[in-house]
Amino acid sequence: MPETTPESEALGFKYASGKECYPALLTAGDILRQTRRSDFDPARSAFFMGAADGPCRFGQYGNLHRMLLDEQGFQNVALYILDQDDTFTQDLRMAGGRKFEWNAWMGICATDALEQLARQARPYEIHPGSVNDWFQRSVENVCEAIAAGRPVRPVLLQARAEYDRIETVGRGTRPLILVVGEMYVRINRYANDGLFEQIERLGGEVAMPPLGEWVHYSRMTRARRKRMRRDFAAYLGGTLRGPIQTAVERRICRTLGVEPTPPIRHVLELARPYVHDTFEGEAILTVGKSVEMIRHNRIAGIVHTMPFTCMPGTIASALLQRVQDDHGGIPVLNLAFTGQKDLANRIRLEAFLHQARAYRESHR
Image (cartoon, rainbow, N blue to C red; front, side):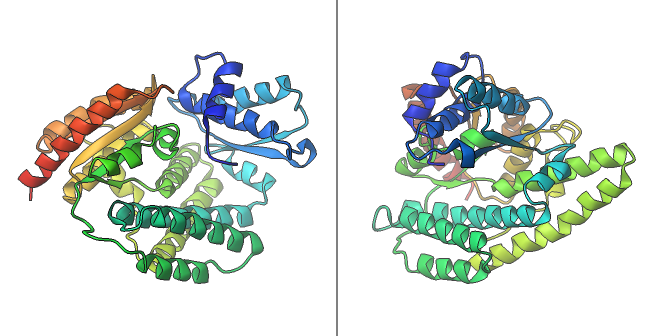
């Protein structure tokens, strides 16, 4: 679907109760907006939504979307919900099983790597817009190759060759800002009020955990649950997925010349002094990734994003205070998003970038 727009937000607030968290409203609005397009064909359309258990309302999004579709007269439009927990394997079979899983994984890894390259170059581009144009074109080429069943490697090699021709100046001279937190708000440009662009406009460069990190994490937690329930066949299947997924990810990263994400167990180990890994969800990944990037002396500050009233986000905000105390007072900014274009957030971000530059200079 097209990216989220003000129309999506307006529809979400109009047809939901208003008590849902912000990503629930935006995804509902995106779906309703799509049904109002002149080319929308209910007989040939389906919507995709993830789900998960844990201390988060994410597992209820699909129920909200189903209710809204039914109320709008689209009872026959399918809503395909991929549960990241116990029914993951069964849900995958509905979408084509192993072939769907590996095609999706290739697309996720390729997009993660392309986004990493774009973030590294965009603040330094000589011709504004050249990096975004390259990124959109490269992602479309990857999608077309996967859809047609063609090898992805030639497309990635072409993307890297085009990337190397983008004119930039002064790469690596800006303070590197790690953006962590709730995954949807962190990634969706409309939901975070153009956060990346704001950071770059204020003189920073953005780093962000890849989406693939969550896939590794959810695979690991599923396998652990299967082992606890003595479902050893499912446990073995989930465990064996890990090395194969890692090999695919590393091959794609090597082709594009980017650094792959560290093993998920390493991230959880770094978070252990602050939160035990049996407390599942995004909070532990937020903390672990922050510590990992600090210890590699890569970042000058951390921006933690979350929807207003987000439960895992509230926990992570408290834990990041301890991370800050333990690591030389590195600047940390917690930003909660509600749908309002908050001038206060922008003013706080400007002050934060000033702190990040000072921190960077003092830790060289």
